[in-house]
Amino acid sequence: MLLGAAGEVAEAFVWIREGVPDGDYPVPTEPVVIDQRGCEYAPRVAGVRAGQPIAFRNDDEALHNVHALGRGSNQFNFGMPLAGMETRRTFASPEVMVPIGCDVHPWMRAYAGVVQHPFFAVTASDGKYLLQGLPPGSYTVEAWQEALPRTTVAVTLATGESKTADFVLHQ
Picture (cartoon, rainbow, N blue to C red):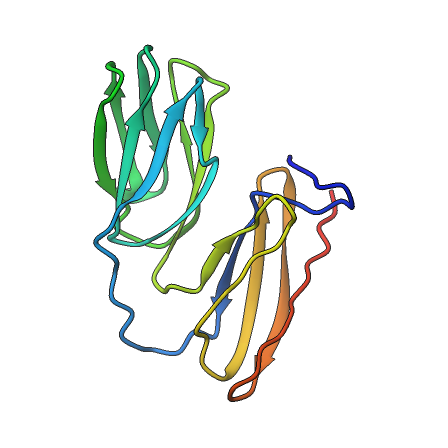
């Protein structure tokens, strides 16, 4: 787990779990990129929309594979034997979180938060995140971090209002 100087938590996936109104949230066609570099996935935690492409890249001079351990159609497993290779896949359905591993290098781990809407973020090294464009309403915001239990907070937004939602993550 990555901690900042004051205990800030990096690489936490923050998303609106409940309360998102029905709406037209077009799925981006630009891929989310997850690289294999130095026998690690980068980024380790990513957010992606269901149906949005993910470009998996291999920058290493080593055989890797990408093994997504999601449910149903969110499972896949393919090899990436060459440096410079790129393979694209999509996750078809929402799932928070989908673990991704490399069967060749078992320490390699990544996680994808797959959601239907655009209201998600991954915390930076200072623990900060930003969810933009939320319409007025009441929401359940959830934070997930691989080494800590999930945590939620309730947030109600009025028209034109912005708020800070801090999470306290405990082991």
